[in-house]
Amino acid sequence: MGQAYKVKLDMFEGPLDLLLHLVNQYEIDIYDIPMAELTEQYLQYVHTMKQLELNIASEYLVMAATLLTIKSQMLLPKQEIDPEYGEYEEDPREELMLRLIEYRKYKEAAKVFQEKEIKANQTFTRAPLAIEKKDVKPIMTRGETSIYDMLDALRNMFQRKQWNKPLETKIERQEIPIERRMEEVLELVNHSKKGILFDDLFPYPSRSHIVVTFVALLQLMKKNKVVCKQEENFEKLYLYRAFDN
Image (cartoon, rainbow, N blue to C red):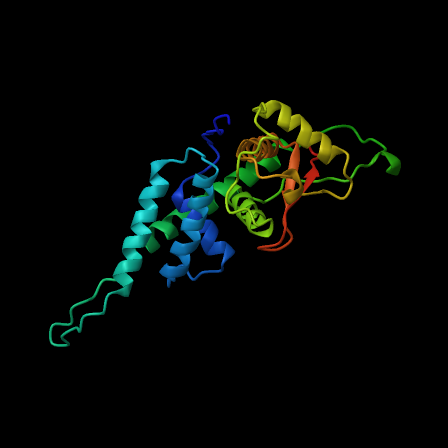
């Protein structure tokens, strides 16, 4: 059996980005974080990354340890405060809350500047031109799906297909170049008018095939060759051809 793929991705923005994704996805009150729920969901994402043997940064593991520490502190019995001294009992979540609020502020600002840049790049001046309706193609814009949505879809796919872990099989022992898998995925998407279900890209539990397909898909999205759409949180993902490149 060949060695499984070990891939380092530069598309992960960091543990705070993952935490903010979870806050938004589960509609968590950032000022009153349920540490048990947040920690459990965070660890599930980290477990999926490790399950695929993705070479994730150590800062994700440091954040995991931090969340577990805060969760443990929240389980400790609260000390009685002497009203005479009026001592303030610090909330173990306060530092994490402030970091998330600060990170969200900068992320939202960066998004505003990015939208302005995209709008400026799409502004052109030209002479009037008559366009026949038959020449007009539907526009499929870049999707809002993040890498963490993709990991969540992958984890849910494992559960639906009852794969406890991706296994190497005799069918898929030869490693597939990422470039070739990108071409295969793009061909599938280009020939589908209704979109390709995310799960259908992973027909069998070969770790090599799963990782290469996952990375190939991320690269295609980065190059704006395909878009990944999800109607609502926790819904299935579909892939479509991008027409704005």
